[in-house]
Length: 230
Image 1 (cartoon, rainbow, N blue to C red):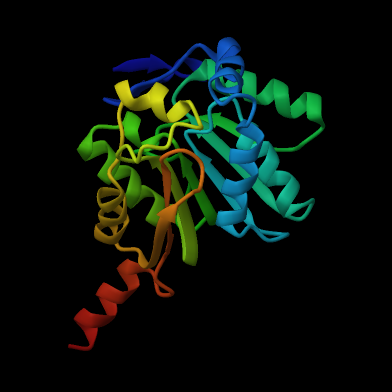
Image 2 (cartoon, rainbow, N blue to C red; image 1 turned 120 degrees about the vertical axis):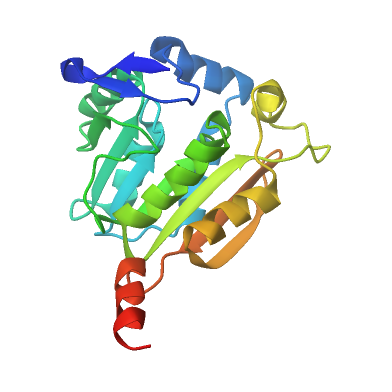
């Protein structure tokens, strides 16, 4: 799929891209029975955000989570959000401006993130990995490892296999659009090179999470050291 980014640059992705930004927030509120705020705050609790940290929200949609993350990291912290949809990014910028919250939103792909190596303390990837086919999903995990600082962390949240829980409707709503099995989500970040992986259920519907920590020494540096000192 090719989409037009701001400035006329074409972005190529094989993932599913949502463009209906104006309806997106209303839909999320409706299908979550108004409990989207609970999901957002619980997600940030699991991410263990601290004041002053730098945060990237991959697949940020209309920016609600990124704006909430900025409130957690306070003035000294920095939050960026990327999404493949220019419409979503435009909506996110308007919401941040209206709230008086400084967040950098830009159009970008999860599998080719427009940031230098080691840029962020924390990366968030919430209910977006199921939109990516297997190979782009693997590339996204590798890109997250690249842009996170040594010892930094990633929190990924997505829909898992049905657990019988039906109190949060997005789980049912997304059953037609894709899921990521818990063991596959864990393997995704393990194979990308993350260590100290925690996983479990979010406690809302059949959402589950992986919290993974990047190696304290960058992967490239470790490889180079091993070559120098066999």
